[in-house]
Image (cartoon, rainbow, N blue to C red):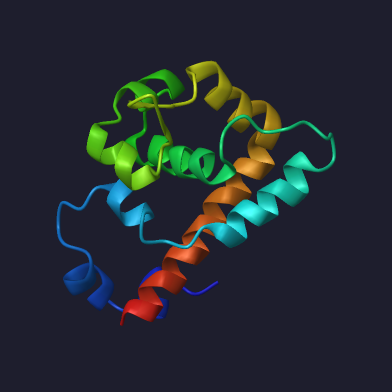
Length: 136
């Protein structure tokens, strides 16, 4: 697999993304629909359970958790209004509908497992590289 710098060059770091850009803002520019479809097909279709939260939101939260290196609970409590807007968290009655820490934990540990988590990170990374390549 080629490195990020080989695929995108240093321009991605030097001009496309401003220094200090939050991970949530970066994720708002990445097309995660292929990742969402993969997750729906591979991790939801087999047991027939419905999802309470948008798969795209859960994927973005997984990336934020990994980037910030926080617990499930602290990741959700660390979200600002700006983060919620970038992550496209649904608003109901004027309040953001953020998953509970237990729902978030269940998605990662039980629904995806270690293999699914690694797969998500690779797929999101691939989408990030594609986004960077298009921006050049």
